[in-house]
Structure formats: C-alpha cells, structure tokens
Amino acid sequence: MAFPASYVVRAVFAGLAVVALVTGYIGLHTYAKTLNLPSAPLDLLYWDLQLFVFDSAPLDEPKPLPALLEFARFAAPGVTIYTLVDGARLLFAAELRRFRARRSKEHVVVCGTGSVALALVERLRATSTRIVVIGSAPVATTGDRKVLYVRGDARSPATLRGAGIQRASVLYACEPDSSANTAIALAAHGVARAGGRRPLSAYALITDPDLCAALRARRLSLSGRPRLRLDFFNLDELAARVLLDRHPIVNEQPVVVIGLDAFGRSLLVEMARRRRLIPAPYPLPVTIIDAEATRTVEAVSRRFEFVTEVCALTTHDAPPGDLPLGELLPSEPPQRVFVCHGDQDLALKTALTSLRLWSCGPGSLVVRVEEAGTFSRAFDDVHLLEGLSGALRVFAVNEEAGDPQLIGEDLVETLARAIHDSYVAENTARRHVRATNPSLVPWESLPSHLRAANRRQAEDIGRKLTSIGSALAPRVEPELHFAFKDYEIEQLAMMEHERWLRDLVTDGWTRGPVRDDENRRHPDLDSWDNISDAAKEKDRDTVRNLPRILATAGFQIVRVG
Image (cartoon, rainbow, N blue to C red; front, side, top):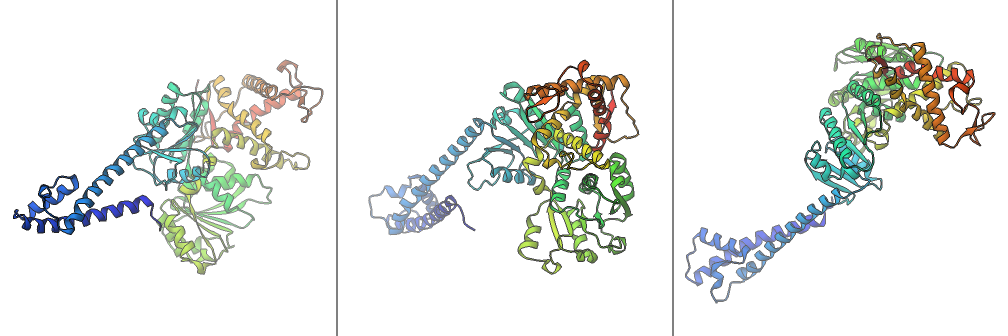
C-alpha cells in the first residue's frame, strides 16, 4: 500500500529526531569530559533536549565539538523548525478547510461518519458536487479536495452554519440515531429559514420503517412551501428495491424468505408490488421462515392487502438458527432464497449451514449483511465458496441503499409511482395492452412529462385532504374505514381539475376541439362548469380511487376535524 508523501516526510523527521537525541547525548558526554563539566545522566539529557530549542549551555564554550555533537546541534533545530512549519501548515489548512466549507455554494452536506454516511460520500464523489461532512471524527478523504470536513454536532445551528448550510443544495442526516437525524433536519430548517436564499432539500435517515412512514405522511400533510424540503428515508425499503432490480423474480418458481426483520418485510412488500404489474396465471409461491412468521405476515397483509392477492404465502414459525431448514423448503427448487436476518452473523451462518440451499443455481442464495467489507472480500477475492458454483451472493444494505438518487425519490415520488402503478394494474386487469395504450409501461420507461404530471398530482394530495379536515397516515389500522362524502368528491374533483388546468396552461397548452399532444391542445382546458360530464367524471374517479392508491403505498386517510 502506497503512503502519502506527507507521511513519509514525517517519518523521516521523526527518525532524525531520535538520531539527533542519541548522537547529541553521546556527543555531550564526550564534550562534558573535555570541559570538566558534570556528566550526570539527567544533566546530559537536559542539555541534549536544549539542542532542539537552540539553547544548550555547554555549546557556549569556544572549543571544537565532537563530530556527533556537531551533527546533533544542526539536526535537532532542523527537526524543531520542521515541526513548527508542519504544525502551522496543518493549522492553516484546517482554517482554510473551515473557510471553504463556510463559503461553499450549491454543495451537499452529509451529517455522520458511519457506514451509511461513508457510502453516500463515496457515491457523491463521482459527481462534480462539493461535499461537506459533519461528524465527530474526520473521514478518510484520500486527499480529495472535493470533500471538506467540519467537526461538531450537526444538531447545533453554529455547526450547520460552519458547513455553509444557508448556501447548500442538499443535506443528508445519516447518524445511527433516528431522533438525532430528525433534530438535525429541524435545526437545518431553522438556519435555512433565517438566512437561506433558496429551499434546501433535506433527507433524514429513519431506521424504523413504520416511524419513517408516519413522518413522511405528516410531512406531506403540511401546506405551503417551506424553506426546507424535508423527507425521510429508510434503508431497508430502498435496499429491497435495489436487491430486486439486481436479482429479479423472473419465473413462476417458488421464492423463500428467511427472516422477517425490517428488511425481510420490505422485501416481501416490494416483491408483491412488482408482481401486481405482471400478468400472471396464478399467485407467486412464497415460503416465509421466521420465529413469528405467521403473526408478522398477517400484520404485513393487513397493511398491504395486495401481498396476499399476488403471492401464495406459506409460513413456518421457526426460531432463528433452528437448523436444518431442509424440511421447511418447498418441494420444487426455489428460484431465489433471500436470507434477511438483521443479525448478519446469523444470516451468514444460516446460508453456510443450510446445505439444501446451495443447489438452486448461480446467484440463487442472497444473504443480507449491513456492510459488504470483509464478507465480499472473503467471497470474491479469497473465493471461500468457489465450490458452490456462484450460488451465494452477499448484499450489503448500508452500501447499496446509500445512493443519492434513490434517497432523493421522496414521498411525492413514491406516491406518483403508486398512482402510475395503480393505473397500470387496473388497465392490465381490463386486458388493455401497450399497443393501444403506450402509458402501460414501468415507471422508469414512462415519458418524463407523464411522470411529472403524476408527481404534481401526488404533491397536491396533502392540500386536498387538509381542505376536508383529513390527513395522511401510515396504514396501521385498515379497519378504520374511510369514505369520501358525495360533496367532498365534488369539491376535490373541482380542485383536481383546477390544478390540472393550471399545470397545462403553465406548460403552454391551449384549448382546442380535440386533444393534440404534439401541438398541446386539449378540449377540457376550461372552467369546471364548462367541461363535459365525462371529463368531470374522470376527475371524480381520480378522487374515488385515492384511498385505494394510498393503500398500495402503505398509507390511509384519517379524519382529524
């Protein structure tokens, strides 16, 4: 491993200091005898140390010096001068970094120095954005001038101002403690509101998925455009999406999920959500193995009803580490086995000691860990499991989910995607096809203007609900039934039409006798009273479908007035 030049220079001068100390002591011992001076060890050591501050008393005598002492009287001050210069350089560099951090513009602030924050910094380094890291211990920047470090507590407004938060574009609060991340976001809001020139986007890591959903729901219910665009993210939910992108469910063979911690639950929901969008002759067989598999699956299914609609679930209440698991596996070889225990040692032990999991084919056994680090090097570099024909894959949640693009897909993006997914599922059930409806494509393939339209519709949900004394909440009590009243449907349909009308006019659309996307003409670009009954009914259906669409995203509407 190559060391930075500064380390080499410091090591050289450290060695020179030792040599100067030894040669000075020996030289002074010889010189003291010549001058008939006391040569007690402590006296010699005291005079020796004085060489480093240019003031060793015996050297005032006008007599020739021994060679070793002659060397030491120049080497020792040289070490002192280097130490002073290097210390001044470090102090100046630290002050310069603090100044650059305070004066940065359009930069990204990352709060935390744990694995999530480090993974995020590594991803951000690939961009042209300057990064300011706030934490209690410096991060290894490998000499990268793009990364600046500010020591301190990110919950302190003074520390945030020292990181230039007023001129930053994005803040990520990635401390292990969710409450600390929420406090950081609120402190950033205060600083940004006091002196910011533009809205700041802030994302706070929340480790509990249910708390994350609750905070996101409350955030969307707030009205107005604050100086802080705040959202909350959960790594397990993001990681589940990444994992299924990388290891998709491609056929009708069974799937096995071992462990229903937060990641296992998120994976099950995401798998079912994707299954809804695929025409399939029968539900996907999914075997769940966990200490409380039955109870947990019931809770997940109450909140996300589509899970049991698209998946045929078989549960086994088996304690973690209760091996072997062979008799709990489906009779047909599974296409994928996901080991999702929150304890990564337990997850790895399960994968390495459940021998029947090894024969399902390359990449069929996926093990969840928090950080790849040692595990990935052991498997990829040392090839500990090369005899398994590549069956085992290690998936690191903290590193894979620490993606700025994924984190940036806030609640508005989530609901916009849910609106589109619901539209695709509904029209697929009616046997509509892409040939006649080009919008029946995955969200990623949807034209940008249609995605933007879905986002604007999602962004307006909170305003509509507030107008009828209701709010968005995580779907934890589905039995708390909600239904719009007739006059509310009419009121919200009018609000939806007015929003849609403003958006299209802003985009340059005008009224025309028939719809013409190329020339931006639409027959319904008129007031509510002047549009057709069919157009009004379409807006009413949008309102009627809202509770069902929110339910697929894990939310529900609650009356609060």
